[in-house]
Amino acid sequence: MGGPGSDSPNSPPFDRDRFHASLRTHAFGRALHYSASTASTNADALAYLQQPATTSSPHGLVILADCQTAGRGRRGRTWHSPPQGNLYFSLIVVPQPGATRILPWLTWVPLLSALAAADCLSHQTGIPVSVKWPNDLLIHDKKVGGILCEQTTTADRTMAIIIGIGLNINAPPSTFPEDLQPGATTLAAEAGQTCDRVAILADLLLRLEQRLDRLFHDGPAGMIEEFTQRCSTIGKIIRVTLEEQGMVQGIAESIGPDGCLRLRVASNESPAPPSTLLEVRSAEVVHLRG
Image 1 (tube, rainbow, N blue to C red):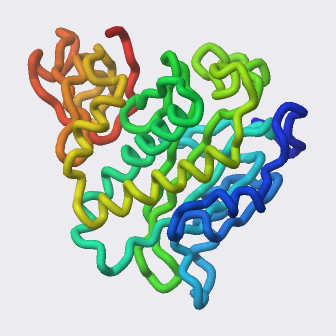
Image 2: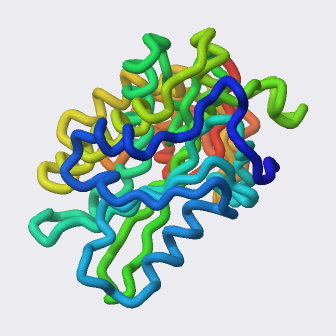
């Protein structure tokens, strides 16, 4: 786990003034809490939402840090968060009263967040970025980012969503722990040059705002096809461990209406009969082969 420190020589400090000048969002990022180091931006966001309500809405607040000493990933994992010019931030989303049928579509928030991030990184660098279901960001099958979404409530009991995003931008891959190096990469390593964190964050927040506005007002129409095209899991032979069926192997066939992964069972060792179509909503997915 990375500790407090300054940015690497090749990555300039985060320029808050240039960031605010670059923003094109209505709400996302208009309020920014920035620190050199924190334990976890998601934990900071959760704590912020428990403070007594103020006159300003927390909607759109971004909590950004150059380093996390206790960064969290999906399924209780640690997110390695060194201080060499990466992006670690949490965005607070409070759906507006006018948004309809929010609850049935909450399962799409992690997927659409990953889709927005993949679109942003590809746009900024020209490098193809794929999504490993549900929300890991990959370049050439190596992880460049991850997302942790948490549902909570504000101090006045209004529903809120925290979208935590960690992106490996400028840290040298050689600084990662040895066990992470084979499966991880950074945007700068793939692009062959230092990447602009300010431009990336401003662009990503705009894409997040646009996608979530569409989701909360119109539902996920058209998003299944868009996510499928970006998802590197579809068509692969994968292995998942499920609570009831245990370890299951099969072909990732499609994405369901609620964002679930539809898995066609292909393993004779699986407790589920071969050719059964399972709908996976929470599991660690291992890509085996195409």
